[in-house]
Length: 129
Image (cartoon, rainbow, N blue to C red; front, side):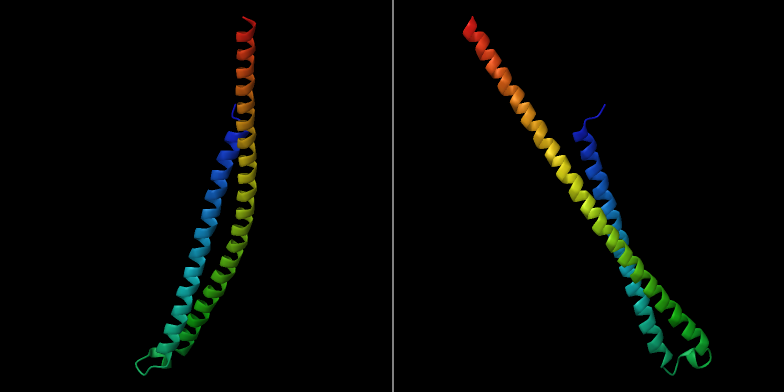
């Protein structure tokens, strides 16, 4: 059977991994939003050039711009959601770390108390003999 200390140690590790996952996803969504924004800017720039096919297919350009803006909006919303999950994971990680540190300190105190008690017991035995 594992001790509470061991379980908390594993839980801290899992919480840190979960937090890292959310941070990675958040960064990915932000990168995708930036990419969509760049695509919008590029499409708008090409829309106004003479060599552009926008004059022949304006609806296509407008649809691509609208789609890119929609992706940007969705990615920013997803990033905001992941930021909330990061905050939650951080709070949970901190709470579990505090519990782990408390248990570890208590175990160390108990071990130290047992060692002192053993020393006292050994000294009493020596004094009696």
